[in-house]
Image (cartoon, rainbow, N blue to C red; front, side, top):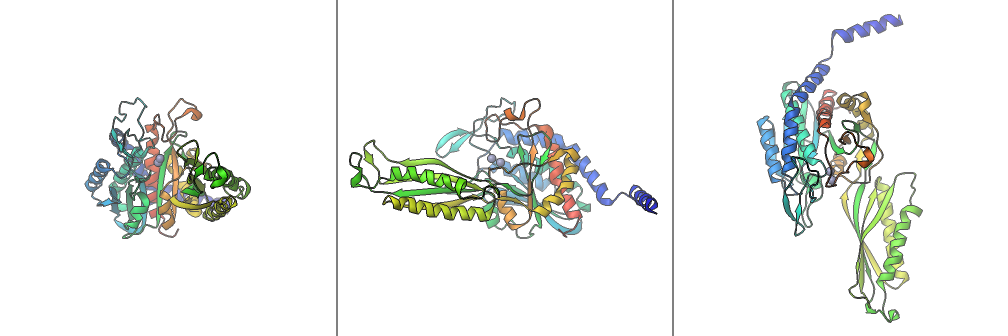
Length: 433
Ligand SMILES: [Zn+2]
Ligand SMILES: [Zn+2]
């Protein structure tokens, strides 16, 4: 009885491969054929990098490509953002895929034939510009995913939104930009996606995909403590209030918070002070000292708790010396929070993209991503694609943002497969997530 049931099921499976399987095989073939184009686009974008909120050429390239594919194209979103909408031939849910397009003020030193020689103004200074975070590869891979999925349009059950995002690295001071501005300008309205997927290239084993559920990249908050004392001569500190010594105690007290007051078994917390500003002359005790730093957390409750503790610490440490102090916190990115159920579901799709042994887990990353803002609106999964060059120990591979950062292009096919495979699988399973 038991064996006959199994063989019947097996026969059925062999005789009638599902339509979804056919479509996936077709998708794989389409992607394989268009990879030379993806690599050309990536090299072209790499040679013409543009800083955050200046992605003029890149967005034109993307928009022209999406128009050629017959997608509905929206431009000028959050300055230079581009959105392409692919309506499949069958009804179904809506899924979004995202790539970021901006480069960094880094002078390239890779020596590649298509290395960037571009210079631009950044914070009033002339700097080299480089795709040192691999957003050139992200853009090219999503252009490839759009082309592959557009070829299958009539069989696609639902809608795919392609989000080409500017200014992921952060808008220049005084400007808005990135994912937050795209959302503010209504990118998730008409149609609203049911889920979103995105990836980042990372200096890990080439072609392998890495993913984890829940807190994946940190929330990033910039903080500024302003300590107010009373200026006086350095020879007679008792005649004023010295904010420099208060700053010394304050740095120590702030750094003790993550180590003494946070349950580190729950999730990691990092506080770093990168700037101490105050004083003008060796024998003048200044009026004011500023401490500027960053807070990295993986849990919204831990984040707000830590900020409350910092407020308390800042106030009381200053008061103990007769000074006063204020704390200002501004959010750079929320936690990149991978929806647990969706991440679990995505495992099979990612295994199709990179092979059963091609998907691994990873530790939380204390860097931040503004993809997190999209995930605050809809369930999403953000994962990593290994792009380390061959023949080098991983420990010696240049990290993102380094002038020596390189992308192993042989890995990009798996990235295109992952993005378009996730979209197609998500739509094929219906909206019953
Ligand atoms: Zn970056
Ligand atoms: Zn990046």
